[in-house]
Length: 292
Image (cartoon, rainbow, N blue to C red; front, side, top):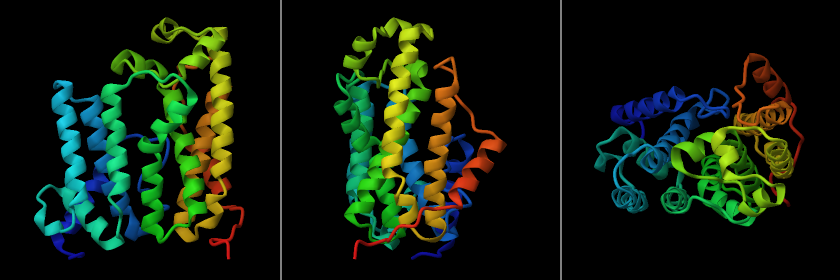
């Protein structure tokens, strides 16, 4: 049951893990209601473990794929924290039990990491968006479920925000994704249209053509992020503040990317950026939570 010392320890463990990695977007931050920080950290740990299996594990692909499928199967039957032994799974079981979190977003999330093992190039932007539907959107949906019963409108806005944030992450890691994992998340047809080769990205060369291509990508991500921004005004209290901070943090990273001459330089948000994000987040555009 919630409140058992082992469950509290499991949530503490997840929060420590969640704050140990630098992120440009807040993870289980102090902006969240205290009761949600542990569950959000547990979701983060689940995603991080799946990501590490796909990217960091050096075993053969078949073994990693089998472990990811096992994660999918395990999360679908996850109900009782007392039946689990690892702190991440204890916390996640408690979160699923207390908040009624559906299994589908977790399954979709792992599907994306399985796809990372099998697909390294994307022919069109539509293919990239479909990947984002599984790799990013499930996290936003789980956040909404933690806050209550989301409407379809809220889910649509959340999907737009999460896909935009995923794209921004891709744009920060162009060189690393290719040289370390042999992946390119830029649409192949748009690379050809702008005259950008894989060799240019692998060499870390900011050519005129690549910069033009990336400015096009940044503008599209910005439109997508703005399309989902009304979500921040629909959520009340500290959850709304957290979501606005995430949206404004993404916008700030995107702004820095657009200002840089070197498309491979990874922007790092500083104290002044944090103040700008917070100031914008404290002034929500008011929206009704429900259409009626």
